[in-house]
Image 1: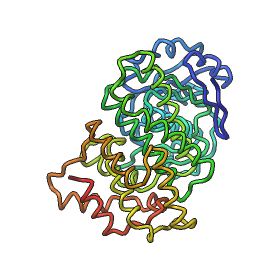
Image 2: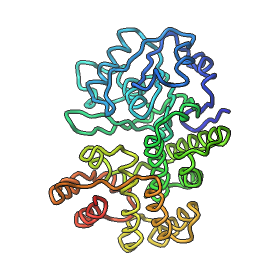
Image 3: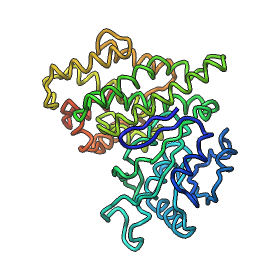
Image 4: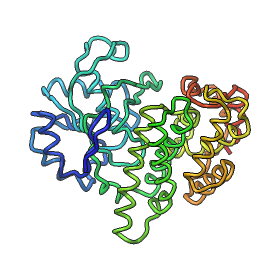
Length: 376
């Protein structure tokens, strides 16, 4: 199955890799992989790609700017003309940055240069159903300890090659965390001030499928046929959520989550998911603080639409069901040992840019109060 969007071609099945390489005109590939690659069910098919390749795996789970520089050097040194990324968000983000920077001046910090499309084809093969990075224009790297959000249309992979088989052997916690990330992206995109009719249709499809299937996907059914169908459904929904976020960007739950991840070592999807219901509850209670130009009545209708996609009759019920789902998946809120200091640190960490996408205004006092609820 092949789908063409405004930005890329999405193809299902690892068997299509050779034809995608041919379409890309690849003669030598930089293969960007993470530590999970040797254990993947598709490792053999990737290793047997019909063009020469060089492996690049020298990057951390939260990739550093210096890691990307090594990747650019490797790409240029070996005269590669295409990139294949296999892995989760980190692998794909590193590959995106290599694509973006490989034609820039290596003597000047890449983050300070004006970026243009390098023209290098990129094939992204996601191995989790979570970030949707295989279909977005965003990447995250760290420079001097600070998170850098890279945003450029040209880094949307030329091809997203989807193979649900890679999800079968994921650990339970990783399944839960990544699927929660996708679910939160779908919800956030839906209520974002940047939402459009197109993005909301993508969100509606993603949220409906993820909400219906997340528990069974995480815990399994004991039936290999059912689990195969679940994996395909969840991977497709995560990709749709990624497409939605590509149009709208994320909102407050993501903005709140990043420092939770670094402070408490809680994986990204888990961190976002503990933030979302508390923030949603606050927004339901304060429609008068709506900053979406379409108005508070419009926003409340959106909240009802999201609730309906979750099989709930009201937004309040949806919040309660979301929190019940978190409990059933054993995804607890982080626990603070230095509560006052941690709350202050967390409150100061929120990126105001992402709050501009949030439909309800959050004051500094509100941010602190919300973190009090999120961090138990």
